[in-house]
Length: 596
Image (cartoon, rainbow, N blue to C red; front, side, top):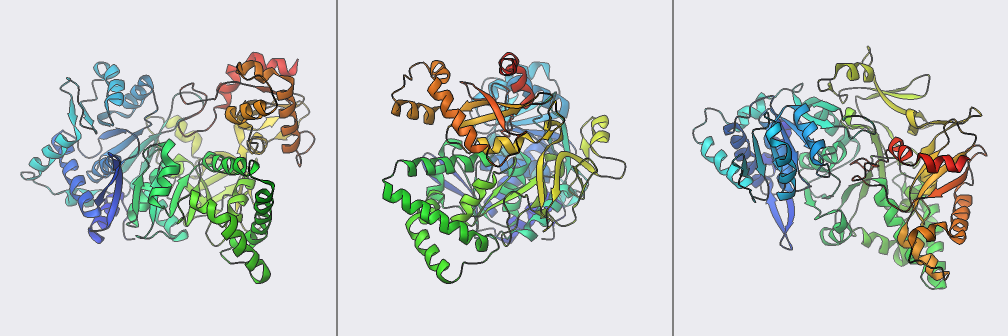
């Protein structure tokens, strides 16, 4: 790994294995392949097309699309030319997109299709800095400022023949400290901030990560987390490409399970909610199995839990335990492995805390989940678990060249080549985040264990301080609650209150199925939530999940909400984090009724 910029990373990879498969998109029901050499040619022509369109070193070019090879190739073309990629979540509404385009000084934007084109068209006339829109699926409207992806490639090919520079020359002219990308934090309050990441930021993170976790050309990634987010972009896009691995782009979030069966991935990047759903489906199926199968499942799980003490340290169980684990694997765990494609080496989890119980469940089946930790501002990885030692309840140890220390108030501070350049056009916020000595203040609270593995407690701003002066980390309570098959989302409340309560969004499908089995009327869902039997069900679920917590942490009351919190409702971020403040503001009266 000689590269010091993402432009060099790209050149190294396409020149090393030009015939090796790089990207797969499912088009008309068939997986369509692009080799590294073919990707190199397309990216080169795209870069020349951008140059012919007036894009130069330091300019900003945005991408507004779901995961696909065109997203990745547009990113490499932009950054190889010395320009900077502005990533935009495709779930954002028009006004949110406009804010990012204006704030970032974007000159050109790649959009996926007619839906995304329409969003841009709403503000195009009032955003004079945006000169051109490239439509990835080639379906244009009548506005002359829109051109197709294919046309941009054609323009680039023609311009390349008469240009006085080569793509390689431009790529090698990029410096490590040059701006690579602007990633706008989804934020839980206020306008998003543009995080400025350099080529050195990402290149250092990729090289350090690959020293800790082996990735090879034989690996197959299934990409479904948004490439707009720093986590998927660094691991599933840039790290995979640097290792000449193959990347399959899932058709959508809804087809991930089916796509796993088709492509047999060896590495998958996911967020905790993914594992929670898989875990929930498995337990739900088992609960409906005959008693004998249930007994076998729980026996196997017990064997797996004992074996996990070896498996999580890169070893195999020995003696009679090895024999029992082989039987458990054949009878139970092999079926779980098939659910995730049958070839998986490990998952990588990030973006939010992973429940210790969920991690241990997968480890028992010898399906490693390597949880890491970081923020957009740190490119993003700060710490990660390793395949030879992964510990649930921790986010691993620091990667090479990255320093972490715990401040007196418990806040996690980070310093290293992965720390951002700052927030775009926001020096005040930059100065607040990075102190005089170069330490980035993460806003998270945590501590190290005996193996120097980091344990995250919660966000500083999320900590609840009860009226009795007790500090409570709500994330731990919430992670325990969502282990219940009947709980989809929840927020713990109790700041300046005399006890802790919770807002709970039930898992509607599971709740209705339970209600029908109990002979309850389910036609009116709100009435069902108010039913004393349902209230009793959630009382018992809380009683089970609160075992092990201190008396002052225990959730004593709750309220059930009928509607899921969504990106569209503004109650969760595009990276699927709950906006606690928004949820609380939207339910002020309900919360007050809990405490009255």
